[in-house]
Length: 346
Ligand code: NAD
Image (cartoon, rainbow, N blue to C red):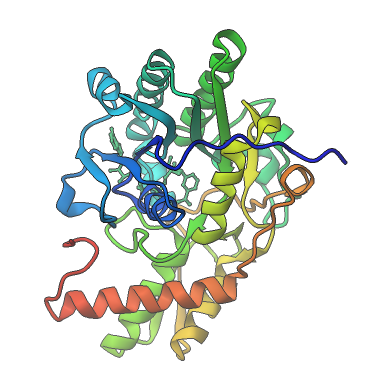
């Protein structure tokens, strides 16, 4: 098999990370800083005190990137742009706020155009497994989704369609204007510094939090959305960051949507048991059958990413969830004690 080729930017070239006040964007800023990149601009709509992480030596700007002028300002001088900015959350959020999710299209539309006009060398778009045809996900053990399964299109309402359209923008900017774009379809990402409460959190963080609170309050019940048979795969943040880096710089993947996730399928029931095991408790299950639960089963087919990049996730859910649980537990107790947490930091 032919080896892939990579084009990377210089350590002193300016990198823009959009959505840097959030989970993956904030972690990506830290990742590039640790790799020795000296000029990083981090942008997010949230006021700076609400950012999940802030890395020293990074230019941090609070700006709404659904605004065209702000996008022009954000990309000034940038060589690479990573778009991780979106209104997003777990099923509870994306099923309820479809308009907000759809409106994220403004961010990518303006940022991509601004990046093109500013002569940015490479542009990364964070798409999602929600872009896939939902009819292929009607069974908890549906076959894993491969990249061609996005069409014929029947994406998740709201959020998934925004992802699919924004992917298309990236692809057409490459086809028509020669801009180098990269598109990763993330399958659930979790880990420390992610959203763990407030309504936007996803299943791993939500279940850890519920177990932690039950333990702390001496409760004996764990609420599960749906009947717990829904299956997903979950990727630890460190695997995701390495995957973004590789996909962005691979010359064989320009304008080519590719899965970035694990294929370790697990049901919500099993995920809950894992969180209980880590917490050292066993709770009674209370199933909320009317709660949002999304498709029955979704998994990532990693044949393409393995073949092209030789990337495979290195952190199993049992390991990643332990680290995540411990981090959320610390956050929970810090907040309870009136100490600073991610939400109040830095
Ligand atoms: P997040 O909510 O933690 O971060 C997104 C950030 O974007 C937030 O800090 C938010 O304030 C910012 N943002 C929203 N609108 C903005 C605007 N108009 N201008 C500037 N900033 C704005 O989410 P995340 O988990 O870090 O996700 C990052 C990207 O990855 C998103 O595009 C998301 O759709 C995609 N994704 C994430 C997952 C996952 O499991 N976390 C899965 C699939 C796709």
